[in-house]
Image 1 (cartoon, rainbow, N blue to C red):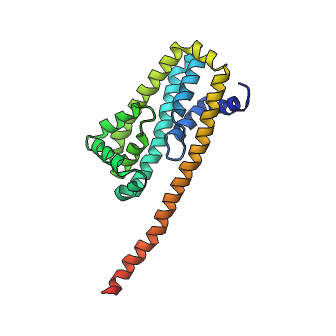
Image 2 (cartoon, rainbow, N blue to C red):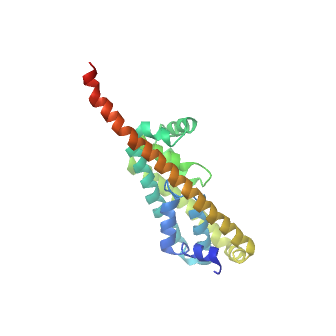
Image 3 (cartoon, rainbow, N blue to C red):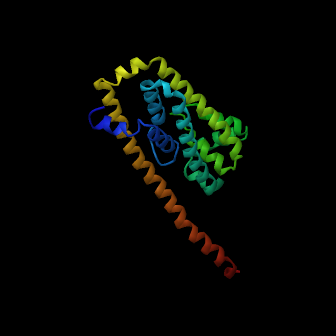
Length: 215
């Protein structure tokens, strides 16, 4: 792979790179719709004999990234989640959570632009059973990445030939720009919301201590 865009992509077209992008793709910080899916498909098209290794690495990475989002949701709780999820979307999240870990975890089979991060955050905030949730999520990811790699193996020659065209380089360049811009925005918003919550906490503690003196 030649050129700056291909060189950048090349860092992720390795087993370790696939694991890393799986973690980043499922986290609150990184922004690149279909990032782990694209890398998984390309790797499976290039070396289909390692198909199930790619499924395993993408699933493990995605589960680890989702675990960080779940942990954040558990930390901020029911009140804190409203800073990250809109009221209408939160109602959808709660409705699915009420149906159990199987329903929410199974949603992991749906690729972007489905807003699955909100459901993982909600699972943590509303303390959905972690073992059941991540068990079903893992199975859903295996199904999703498994289907993608099987298709990539079937159309491998066409995909590899397409990767040699200028159009592919243009698309990869657009994805990289989108990832950088989206990640900067996501990081800024996350930092701003976290900072506002930190600043509000001392005021709440001060008010709680001051209350008895007002009687």
